[in-house]
Length: 475
Ligand code: NAD
Image (cartoon, rainbow, N blue to C red):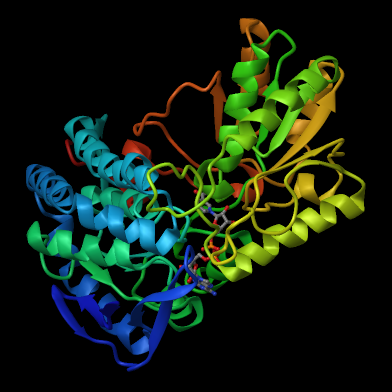
């Protein structure tokens, strides 16, 4: 069993003040995989004080030194590859190959991207006789979810470190071990004491005092909308900056001139990736009525090819959902979908055959979905596809935007003008045309209730900076 009951504060592993622990469950076995400290407000105070004490020195660290520090982090991160993959496979239940090719890689990419962004980043700019300076905002509180344990943490950490803001990180209590390895990586990379602090614990014990701490100048949060609201409320007391990456219910618009086989494969991937626990998952699949029958037949075939099972088995392509709570949520939405009158076309409630232990859900397709239904409006966060039909592009766009969310959107087809028109019309922070791969220097974030602000690359660094105008500097 992995037991880490200490907090990483001011460059040292010290006992948590609470003396209490939280069990971390392996979702594939339902067994306790490890224990972490259940931190409290005293731990938060210590961590914030440590970060605040180094704020001015870290802010003034030359950019070249920050680049070298990020390079050393990249090297140490690569040295811990096997440990990161093992932690993510165990705590998240992600299939081993995905833990390597998706989770491990995404974390690494963010440190490299932040480092590269510093090559061209303009921290100062002359305007007439004035100088405009961008400088680190100060202590940043980072709170992250469980669905991408290295991606969410690394992207915030890399940006804050590139900007020169010291941090206190509270990772999800459900996937804390990848973050503990990051703390060890920073220690080995010689990140100055106090720049990175890790306080493990739950939302109430650590997240709440961190969001309300008077010496924290900004909160960067990724997670659910309701938690984002609470953090914003706390932060509003002393007008902290808030960056929020929240949920989504993203549309995937398929055009009628598409290669149906390719579209079905891609749409299924968007739903089963990370067992559907992806904020940008394209779970509302919009298809022209004329190709519906052929499309859903193909989609069913690709859903059937998903191999659900033991994350350590090389043939597995989809692991369990994270927890009993998440499993119950997915089951409940499948029930709701049927009650609302959608047609359960594939999958359904219960566990796949032969998988009695572990939070394994069935890849599922609903057809005949109306966009007013709960299964079209609410984030299920499981491998459930809702298929809707449209009669023309105008209607497709209207349905796509008829949601409180605006994190992502997808479109696939051949007619370039239609693809571009749809991409420009979808109200979302990122729209993908024809499944092109992502790039870590592109901004990422949400419209509407999907969040505030942008992360990744230079846009991510901007979030951790204040802007100062010095008039008469060159006079
Ligand atoms: P969550 O909101 O329950 O928890 C996220 C984090 O907030 C955890 O670390 C948790 O301990 C902490 N927390 C809980 N209550 C808190 C409080 N009152 N104050 C401060 N912190 C608190 O979310 P989750 O279940 O871990 O993650 C799933 C959600 O995250 C989904 O809605 C998903 O869409 C969203 N998400 C969004 C993105 C994005 O980039 N937009 C990425 C991944 C996940």
